[in-house]
Length: 238
Image (cartoon, rainbow, N blue to C red):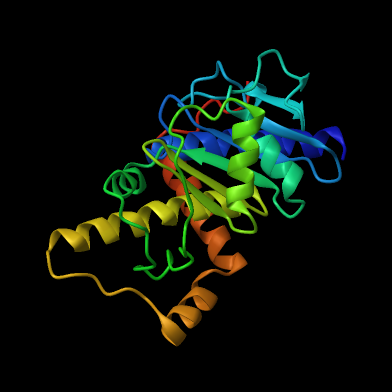
């Protein structure tokens, strides 16, 4: 990979952080990473950088043990989430740790997330990691990666969520619609009449038709343009 490719990836990671903060999936904490194709290294927003104003220069490079290889600041203390998933899953190229409101509320209430919304229909038996503290040790990161298994999502009880993807765009899109699905599930439950969950052939076809590369790109482009109009992407490149 040449330097231009790495620069483009750093910009993409910084943009994803800004966009997730803009829709309140990240707050002062949370992180986005991207594996560098063909290398045992990954990019991640630095610990010190504000999620609201992170720039491409704030994206650091680490090896799979979390050692800083490039950048002027250390990675987040929870880098183990990312490094341990990358060690276990060669098919994962991006990991996002969010602090979503509705998914966390459902977890607090001990209510399992169910597929209730078309674009969120990929939700399926999301495992719950019960340790709610910072995932700041290799052992905890390995536990979480083991719980993720071959899936793409783990809920952290009382804490947040972890989302994996084969690209930054796909992990971003999944993050957005995990929360949207949880919000619709929460709102429907408030009506007190039970909820209708997608199932059977209807669920299968809904998943198949609503989770295509073109839709992932459409989700990314929509949020990129929205964030840009709102001024949330200004100054991404120093």
